[in-house]
Each structure stands twice: as C-alpha cells, then as structure tokens.
Image (cartoon, rainbow, N blue to C red):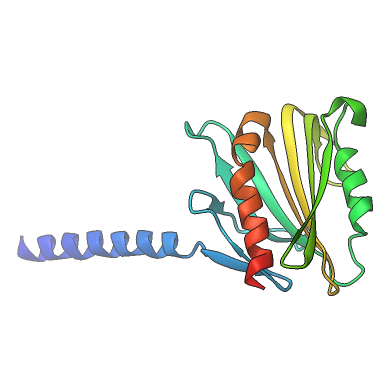
Length: 182
C-alpha cells in the first residue's frame, strides 16, 4: 500500500509540475523585429503555425464565450507594403463600404516613433488573402502599424465588436509600451 501511495504522490506532483511548466511557457514579453511587446496578463499566448505570423495572442471575454485574436506581422525592410497600403487593405476586409464601417485612422508619435492606429466595425471578412472569406458580422478590427527603418511591424486585433472595444486600452498600452522599451 505504501508503494502505491508513494507512486500516487509522485504522479500527482509530476502532473502538477508539468501544468505549472506549461503555464510558465507563455512569455510575458516577446520580440517582433526590434520591438519588445509586453503581453497583457489576461491575454493568452498562442503558438502560431504560420510563418507570416511572428506572434499571436487570444483575448477572451469575461464569460469566455467570445474571443478575439491579436496577430503580429513582420516582413522585413520594405516588405508587407507601406502604412497607407495596409490601412487600405485592412479597411477593405469588411463587407460594407468604407463609409459604413466607422473607419478611424490616427497617427501618434511615441518616443519619436510613429504608430498609425486603424479601427473599423462591421462585417469582417475572415480568411487568407485571395482565398475564401467567412463573414463575421458585428466585428471590429483594431490595428497598429509601428514604423521602423528595418521594416514596419503590423499588429491586428479582430473579433466581436464589444470585446475588441473593451480591449482597446490594453491593446494601445501594449503597442506604445513596445515603442518605449526600445
């Protein structure tokens, strides 16, 4: 009986330790190009399976019934197009015309670095460029282009409008924090 109890104790401790190790693997900070981002604690780290995605996070609603994704892209110097090309592409990812998606574009300077924020609401057309699209009504896109001589970094959050709006402050703190950490 003692051997069984010892084995059970060992097994429970091993499983518990593995669980803690898995939770600890989600980085609190991560780098995309020259920028170091601090992940909001409640946002989950997602391992990306796409070479285009340099980092990916998941934001859950309080009831955990809805989620939004935050994706970080970096294509190197001159890659991925300029700021305006990406703003236009992001706004074009909605089913409705630009005049109907509450589009907002705002340029700010943080630590002598330019960031352009993009915001839009409507029916987001999810899917790979050139591939089939899945309409997602009542959605919001919140994007940021961090300009850099070594190549722009693009950060895009998409999800249900209410959840994305509620996450705007954390999104902007994360983006602007990366400009301050440089």
